[in-house]
Length: 464
Image 1 (cartoon, helix red, strand yellow):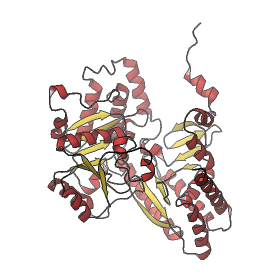
Image 2 (tube, helix red, strand yellow):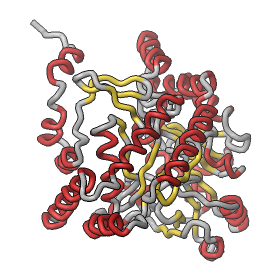
Image 3 (cartoon, one colour):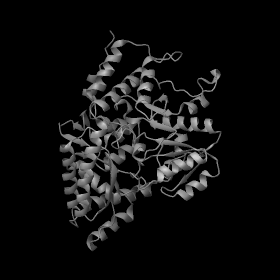
Image 4 (tube, rainbow, N blue to C red):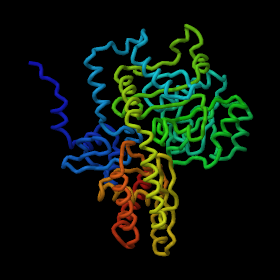
């Protein structure tokens, strides 16, 4: 007798084994980190901007799956379209055909983009979109080298890794593609690089994911002018910033840019099915697929699968119907205004920056003598530990999930689902205020926790 496979029964029976299974069969280092900082929660259910654990406690999600959950978790429209597509029994990934749903999603993306972006390539993920953009740019220009901005993050596959601003991510992976970086906001250095006419493309994140940095003035517009002058393509990596995250459909619209290529992914399918896209000028597209025998020189097996395409169509529809970008702009302004008031109150906060619901809070050495001594003690063990000290009680005591913006950085990054309202913003601001207020008690519980983080960091260094 053949037993039916019942995934609901399996999940119900084995929920709670999560970290044991990952420790045995997946990433032991990640498990150790999550257990050390108290992030080893077992979440049972998710909806909108909330997660629930096995005991029924709600957690406010201000991480948003690294911006994959712009529409909130398990949006009913995305769930419905998955069921509907499965019920249609459509042919899927025939490969030697042109499927309807992939054509419809390409059409929908192009219609929502500036007129010059009139072609689309569909893929599976952000790093895959960047990899494709690299190939399109090199083929179109006949140049090999890539240019990017310091502190950039464009993905972790080997092509995109060449444009990663962190040596930690590159260590151990050998020789990568030819690439060079330039500092943000220095046009002289940028022009010096572009003048060589060696670079196929200048890759930018309009707002950098690692730290939420962006130029204050017209740097991006003038950088675009330089790219045009020296015939280097401008590629906007909107994997994290696109589709409403910054209060506009695309972050490059804040600077009225016209990038030659745009990379999208993360929330494109509503966070339930992997989906990515490259938007570009038709003439660039045609230089890669230039002849009939080159019609598949760049391809991906799952890139046009029916579930991803249908979810992408549904996600774009939800964005318009629910005015997702507009809500991100409104709630972002409310959140930034509240954080700026907390900056006036708490000497630990040195900067608040962001657009829409992509926000960073940066900490620096306090003025008070006693607190400064405590700060230096923590910093001596590792930059970024103070930010971790804030993130941990936000989860432990207030059930709010956030993240430190990058390695060795005293910056907290805030990227909640774009469907949040005033209730969620106020809950975060009140919790953030309480956590920072507890930092003024030295010695105290917060600094004791910091000492434990120091011990863990030193132990990890010795083990390495």
